[in-house]
Length: 247
Figure 1: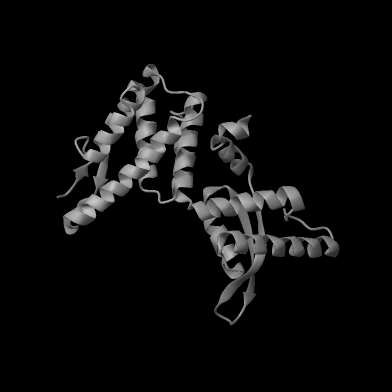
Figure 2: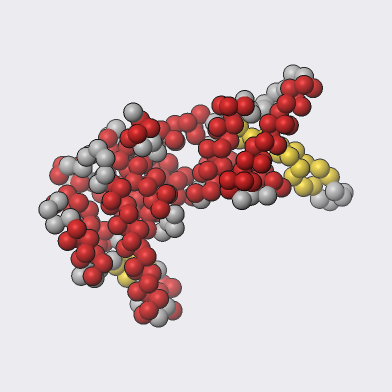
């Protein structure tokens, strides 16, 4: 077995079709996913029980995505779901969502699609870029960015050029508070924070200026550092807003 499609004849997807029996637009989305590959070439190495478990897990994630898309402001129309950019956007979102473990992140994928469609930007380069960023970041990394943004707003933890020793002292105290918050909320040791932020910075959502200490003539290690969010993060978050946040 080199490839396996989501089968609409399976009990799980028939159940989804039945759920939206009186909603032709949502049924059309379920049917559309019938063309999305679920397994790659590795599937031949799995036994039937494991494949069934894997299918069930993905079907449950797809169900969560549909529920999120069907909640709140109704944005789906017959014209929209037949639009080629929407088909591409929806199938791309679905592929990302069914490979995501966290329900909270599946909800973010749904928000991204909903907001893009409402603003008629689901066929834009920005949508593709932000989908790629959201898919790349773990939910924990997203939380780190939100904590960093909050500290910037509440404690002015944005350290670019320091004019005095007093500012430098205050910035280090704020950074320590930030480290403690990330450690508490995300279970990340303080010594791992800068390397993780450096990975996140590749998305363009934050910038990092690591400080190093020399432990030998051949090796430097990260000691502390500075980090700050970019305007791109602010824009990215607007694409992920819930209806409650928008109001």
